[in-house]
Amino acid sequence: MRINRFPKMAALQYKRALKLGFDEKKAKAVGIAEATKYAIFKNLSQRKRVAAEKEAVVKKLKKPQTELDTKTYEIFKLHALDGWPFVKDKIYTDEDYERYFQRWGERVKNIIEEWAEGIVDTCDEKVLKSENKFFNECWKPHRDELSSIE
Image (cartoon, rainbow, N blue to C red):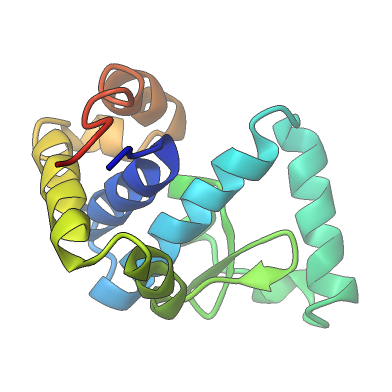
């Protein structure tokens, strides 16, 4: 079975969030939201993405910007409401993570998550807290590993 980068990014970000102290459910939400963010916005500047998400908070989610959580943004550059991250105007939960991985099956999910945990365990906290350093030092060198599972 061929494995693309999306599930690997989701699992890696989930394990990263866990290691940084997020609870299990919020960590899974961060994982799937981060993978989605990278897939959607990889060619869009952060400035444009941030502006679009702030607009979505007020217009679509109907919340004042002052209700945004800061912890998730400081580490992952994801806006969050009540700890649940959102990308564009969709709020992500642990159920989105689980629903996504249903297509791969429990065995494949476990293999991907073990792979991700092994990578996160090698990264120090300073790297884990920096989106740029994490991307360059933990994701880039490993993103093409585990390209298939038998």
